[in-house]
Length: 171
Image (cartoon, rainbow, N blue to C red; front, side):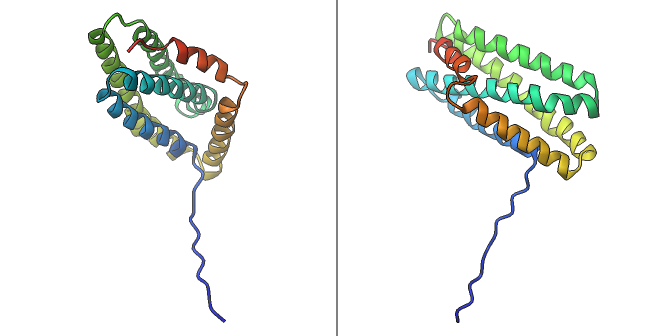
């Protein structure tokens, strides 16, 4: 009889790592956006806008309560300010009059998001990991994954995101 060796990949369900994967995707999109032109730039902006809005909605609903409870209101306030500024920049990008203005606003958006992600990853996530146990991180993961699937489901909040998609950028 032949022995079979079974390999199992272990995946730890961790809500903070789940959010960090989004950050990694955003970084790739930022790089692509900075090197794109015309219709390609517009399509990347549409996707980036959609994904940023979804990510912010997930964080507002599922991460901010943890931050508030574990780290205090000041971090939540800072994150909400970043979200408000991101939404304003997305609207400004949508209304950019020319390519120079568009590119300037894109760079502002990228800079804001990179700073926001750095604060989350190097401060907020580190502090939360020190305070939360693995079960709490798994609950966060499960709630984020469920909420994301609901956002992506046909007929749900996607309509609002599609409306944003149709309004974003005249690249």
